[in-house]
Image 1 (tube, rainbow, N blue to C red):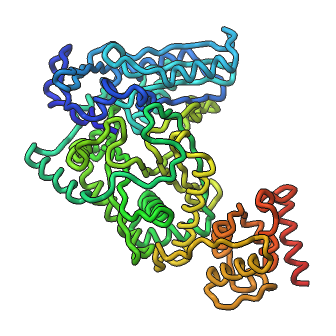
Image 2 (tube, helix red, strand yellow):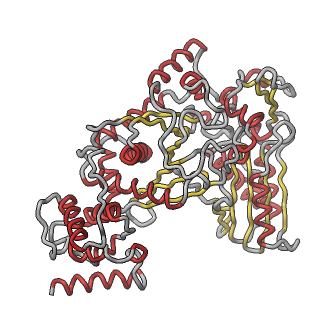
Image 3 (cartoon, one colour):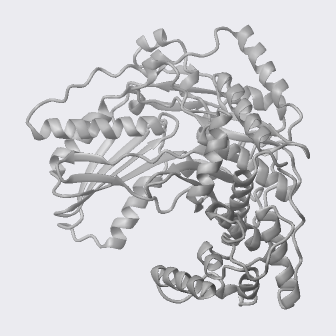
Length: 563
């Protein structure tokens, strides 16, 4: 992401209302206003809230109109001086349009509403002529109402979205009481933007960041199924995710906490390890989105403060998991310290011939996922953020990391987002499986070397002896013993729930069979698991009946084995 709002001129110039003011020509500004039409949908930040319960649509429309009309950033107009290669802006334009559609009264079908929402979310803005935001209240029926809010990324970020949604809620509740909302006058974003102190200091800091990143490849050896250089590549995205076992998560986050790593830094380490183990590349540049609101004065301001940073992670044949976590932490801290150094200047120094149609320096993003909170308009009337259809992805591959607490125990969730044409579902499933395996190895022994993994076994699963040998060898590795009995249960041989999860990963990787924990729990011996691998690949993970039936069956089998 660029930093157009961060590079606006001195705030005193804003007093000249009605005049165009120059802004430093950042990469984002040039992309948006001039060069790459296919990127336009990915620079819109759409939001769809579905309210359940009786909504006063007239009051909601009035609340949205009031909230969106108050903020200078949402009244911006932009233009590009092509000759000077300069973006100019003004903030005295009319406020954004807010509309109301009664889909039930007007006879809209579900398909028609869906097409309307898509158009509202992804129709580009004419930034020189209209406000960079729009909203529509759509009444579906007496108990369901949609709020579709779309703002251009040039003036808006994720923090701004939550601020605006909260303000809409506060304004609605005040209007519903017949009162005016108690809101402070919003400052202009440029009033709270701080950059490097002077040009000389900026040049010195750019040079320092360039020295830290120089020599790293500006590509990552991703397992592409499509061509990322294709000018016709669609940016319509796809997402796949995995939820790590609670025991693995506890062990991973325990080691990470010892090393002072956040969940984000842990994700950086796992991704670097996974790519190093599967591609042989050992030096990586990853992008990360930074909120850019270090100044407390910017905490409640709607504007584009977010910026993109690039961190570097390196490892070698002797790097242990614990050392890799330390490296990820150091890389993150160095990058965050230099968060106000413009990425465009860094990219220009490191890759002067770069294609402006591509993300600078790296095609891979790692970020912490922070789900938006629901909006309560009134008791029993709650708006929840809805998935977008379609979704768009600017990065070739983005890893989002979050800690899921919904099950009572922390579980690390890893999700991959990417343009759908670049990777098949099978490819992203393999990447997620490799990430799970990396997490399991880190959990098992943080002092082990990251690249100390055995070569993939090429086992003939039709050979009973080969199957038995494969399972036996993996048991020996997971249990850290030289001898196992083929007819003793995994738990009686010294296994536990964490080692069982690792066993699932190891056997799945070695056999190519999509195994589940319950599969190996039920077939609890070396011999039983070897026979499990003899089943056709498509049936090894399924089983018949409900999950409760399979669980009870596993317990019965264990009781039979012991009798």
